[in-house]
Length: 277
Image (cartoon, rainbow, N blue to C red; front, top):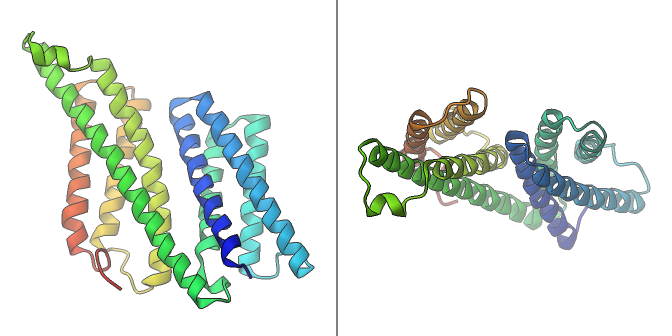
C-alpha cells in the first residue's frame, strides 16, 4: 500500500500532530494564544499532508478510501482534523478542540502503526519497533519535565523555609523568588502531562499489537496511570482550585515520588517492560 518513503512521511505527520496536541493542551490549560496559533498552523500542515495522502491514494486505487477498516480510520482522522480546524478558526471552543485532537491523534496513530495494513512484513515490523521508540522517547521526555518540575518545587520549599525562618544569607539570594519557582514548576507539569498522555496512547497500541496477552493490571500500566492521575490532580488544584504555595509544592514532590516508584520498582515488576524480544 505504501512504500518506505511515504511511510516516513506518515510518521512525520504523526510527530507533527503530537506537537500540535501538546501546544493545544498548553493553550487549554494556560490560555496562551501564541501556543494556540502555532498549534493551529501545525495542525493545518498535518491536514495538508493528510489531504495529499488521501488524494494520492484515491488516484492510485481509483476509488474513495472507505472500503476497509484502515481506509475508514484514515478518512475518519482526516474528518476529525478538518472539524477541529473549523472549530478552532470559527468558534474558538478550546475544550472541544483539544479533546477532538486527542481522539484524532489516537485514530491516526492506530492507522499509521498498524502493521497488518502493509504488504511488506519487514515494513510492518519496523513500524512497530518505531512505535515503541516514539512511546519510550515521549515517556522519558515527560519524566524529564516532571523531574525539573520537582526540582523547582523543592527549591520553592527550601526558599519558603528560609524566608519563614528569616535566614537572609547567600543561599537565599542565589535562589529565585517564590513566584518564579512556583510558575516554572507549574509550566513543566503542563508540558509533562500531555506528553505522558500521548506516550500512554502509543504504548497501549504497541502492547496491543506486540503483546496481545498483556494483562491490563500489569504494575507498569497501573503505575503510569497513577502518575498521570497524580499530575492531573496537581493541575486541577492549581487551575481549578487556585491552590498555591507550600501545599501545592508538597503535592508535586509527592507526585514525583510516584514517578520514581513507577520507573524503578514497577518497571522491574512488570511482565513486559524492560524485556528483550
